[in-house]
Image (cartoon, rainbow, N blue to C red; front, side, top):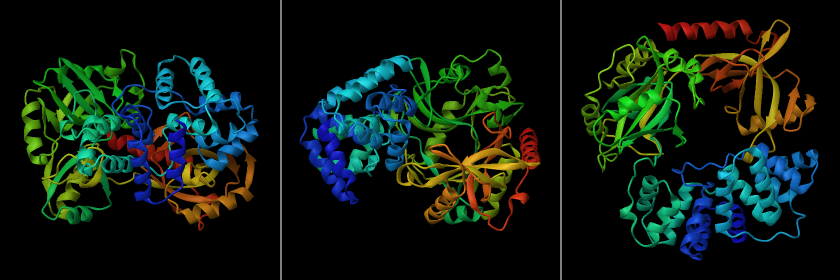
Length: 546
């Protein structure tokens, strides 16, 4: 583990991608195969392979407690260390620098420690083990053990560069490495296959989820005409929970975009199990009532309930809207064009017959589009059906897991914008750890300012640096990571929709807020009000019920 940490330091010290891949490649080939597979996994910032169901369930609070117990540092010293590095790993390396009786941990021991953390139940047991590990290892190893725990290696080494390093180390084609890693969901297994020249043997396996194909954003229907000059297909963009369905050997499992198993919707299993053969589908789980989608802000009440109350599936019925098929009866078909995959999907779902007002499983309804008017009409029709926009797809597009390209584009428009005032700020993460880049904002309610959301995207680095200095000079209360500030900076924020919330003082929360621009021209007295938020919420609810 010490050599891994030292190698990681060397990788972080260079900004040159070729140099990073060289360092990784040379390090991997210097190890035995088992350790090389472990190191490759750790270089991706993961404790476990993508498909694995193991999770450590060790969050920042628990790591913070362990560091405090082992280092003996005060809260102020710990906060100062965190601010210097912007992540708990860097802080751990500094706070534990005085440890003199530590000894090195092997990669196998580090992997076993991560597995034992995942196996232990309850925060108390996990805290005891983590504290023991941090006392045992060297400060540099503690730095990278914590980074792997948090999934934030932050050495400028994305998984794509690890794939390039494998190609270099084992004299393989990068495309073959990428495909094997995509199919297996395990960079360690990919390394083993590459080391013995068996990359072609990589297979997609049922119940090992793969990355979802992602869409890039489009701003206008005109953008879609430019992207698809020969035309394409428009599908409704559903506002729900993306789901990958695996069915085989008499069982069904659903996986989320984070490749975690979805367990909250058991009523979907029977209709999916009734379909013939084995398959992997892509779709979206939405709330469905009276022939229309339920607002996600309402449907999300079903999330996180492994043992939901009996009434919930009746009050908020779920429907899986299927729009792609990537594997069927042992045959990988993601390389086939969308038109062929669609034909196979329609044949597979043909036996499904459900009442129109409450279908448990339904098939998306694409329509051809080429002219700007076609895309605009599809967009307006999707909004009228209660969806959030459209997906535009190239008819000849393959299914590209985990990649965001130009085969699929999404067109959606924000509900509205609000003018708000910043009332609290927080330090960012990574390269923004030294600046105040996360802004909590409020609306007016008479003489009061009530929080309604938080945003961290939309401003330039220069604007954030300038505002950081300003906020330091206008701090009302320094709470460590967070500063309450004088309410003087007005922002215009966009968002997707509004939901009820107990977290914010206003009773509402903006979903997916982003900063449109600074509004130095607008005084705080003229920002939007709680009444306006209520109006937009009621308008949204009315649109979704029509």
